Length: 189
Image 1: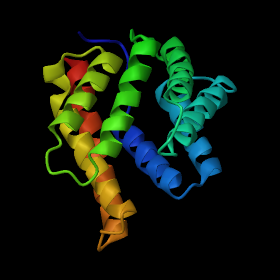
Image 2: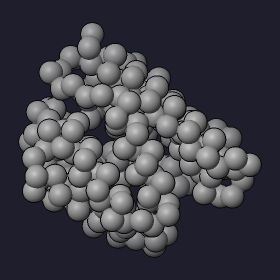
Image 3: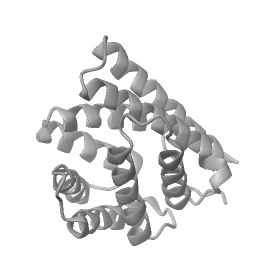
């Protein structure tokens, strides 16, 4: 189902790629700034609510980092972020459902790092993108596949297997751009 939500795939890809880099470098202030800008530009969240949304997003990321983490705490932070995002974006998703699907994406990503078969990972992202953007699984399958390629690239970088980190960061952003262009195209139909 089409929605009136509009975003710029190139900007979302930039913010997400730079945000991943800040996350893995543990540059929390840089990550905060990037998420605030993303929230303001793409979700139309005004300041100071954009700062609060970014706070919840970063708290979820930090809470998720330890292998032994409190999933309810992570879910709670994600749900608060999505509550604010829904309010201003007017996307029709359920914050609780999307937060649960994002948590599932986190779990599957972590578990499948280095695995050859990423079908479960693609499926987790299909469910997340479908619920978030109110699109059919068929409409978001390509975006999910591309997002997995981006995740595989960040895993190669962060595991030390990359032979050209800067080129891999550039390629990661290309995958994310293609991912969000696919969603943008589906929303425009």
